[in-house]
Image (cartoon, rainbow, N blue to C red):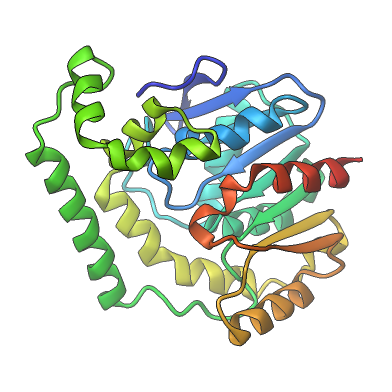
Length: 292
């Protein structure tokens, strides 16, 4: 995989397997971006990483089964995710305290982390993360099958394209010919053409992603049942995408009550779950306020 020069890539050993970790910046505060079901976290978050790295140290991790990391047959429990995050950061020489910024499903693991190891967390920035105040209504066999079919279709499409090796001249020429329609979707947000092309021609390990989705309802249930009000012991900033309806808006309020004394909660107008990490200026300003 090709990563922009200013974001350095390292493979570290976690439980005897390779895990990718990416770092930029040399600031005093260490922000750890934790991905959702992103194809390649270092690429998906690249504009946000570059902006935050102007002032802070920023890193992101490829969970097992994602990006450059090995696949795994290990159970996808909260405890295992937290152990793997801590081990990867330690192996990369990145020491706590951390400002954890989880996106989507990683919010579940980050809340568990903060509950189990609050002394390692300087702050928690929940970036439209999965709600943990109630049972999660996904993970049925039908849900899993639908996601699996989508991933398989994408893999078959990439295979059928007979792509040249990523990063070669032939690959660049292929992308310029076939992915012109992608550029207006990515370039205005600070991505490069190369990053857009990588996202269009790369997939994660399907089996690992499916297993993670399958385990998520139980992981949510475990965090839901924790008696800890995380925001009472760790500064918490909640950044939500614009609510889809009244029910979603009520759920946001209920979630804040479950967290405790949240330092600040905002809704990013005009954002959706899938693009909230591209609202770079808003996220930067809110983190600046939190870390003051």
